[in-house]
Length: 512
Image 1 (cartoon, rainbow, N blue to C red):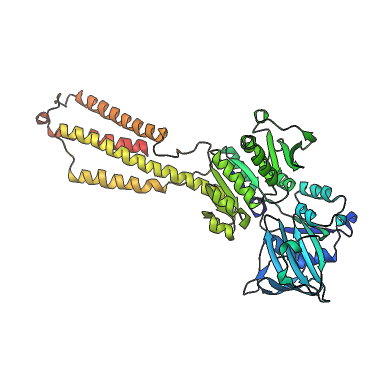
Image 2: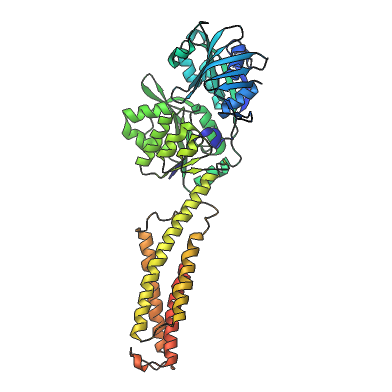
């Protein structure tokens, strides 16, 4: 069994904290603001307002907007009016939602002096691909990797001027998000939840594997995985990445290694991390190796919604029971593909997922698993109880009829009414265990465990009845030595009935 976790707002707290920016104009000077990056923070988003003027939208956009000290004056569909932190009023003429495949978001704005500007923000890798190379600093990727290894959530920003009289409504997204000038990086931090480590630890102790699926940087994912215990402190992380149509392998302290063989990997000491792009390439070019190595991959970074679905589907086909926990629209496919989906938000994910956490707490995944196990165990217990009740009652009936001894009406009411109904109604009320166990309830009523339980209890009751009747026949006051109904006195009838009642009660006692 394995659990898949989205990173942001699932393993980490909801919302981000703005830590500053690094503009292209002063790249080598450290944290420094610029007009372009500040404008992007105020305008490049799809935030909206409720009737009570409450700001709603993606947590990243909200954190960025508040850090810019901007105000959203008006929203009308794809257009908006924004007042920046320095008091400038900007008209947003067109807004494109964040595309999880492109990993970019863009807007077109008109400044007070009439200047028409396109602003694009997104992942560092994708913004690099659409920027003019002359505007990219030499240490671009080195800075990105260094910050990601510290767990910093990064957003790259680009900007370009458009002709003032451009018909914005006819612009395509490809035209807007191309040939832009790199403006800078926005840095955010996101701390893990207080109980994330406890949840991962309890899943690990129950022999349940935890896997991270995130659209964030691979190195950010590795950092958070270390921090929350998804990766062991002494666990060696092997990183796979795609370059020039080949999958290259590195370790944390080694620049280049050969492709690890599955037989040489240890599930306790070794862990693999790769991007969604690398996984898709590996699955397409060497599917057999990809499926064999999949259980050793603990972190998937820069995953698109399709990548997440692909990973979950692979584990389902490998025979794993899967649970997906996510919070955003990019998790919808994976939430639906997994056997169980748990949403920690009120967004589209809550519509697709079978379970939605009202508390938005990662501990809800443990509650779902515990309640699921309790429901399964209770259902099988009720089934087992009804089967054993019928068989053992029939056995006791045969003995009573042979000896011409029968229960009174009130005895039937007590045995078949009070006892049976009470057991049938109270068994499903069993509470889940306080802590997950490595042992799991049987998944089928036709399993060996269920069959052995039923047959074993029936044999115990048969033996108990036989021994009880044999001991009864050895008593001096019990005169009947044969199965002859006419020879049984009243007290002997009472003794036989007592044995039969004890047999019924005994198996119920054992069962309970």
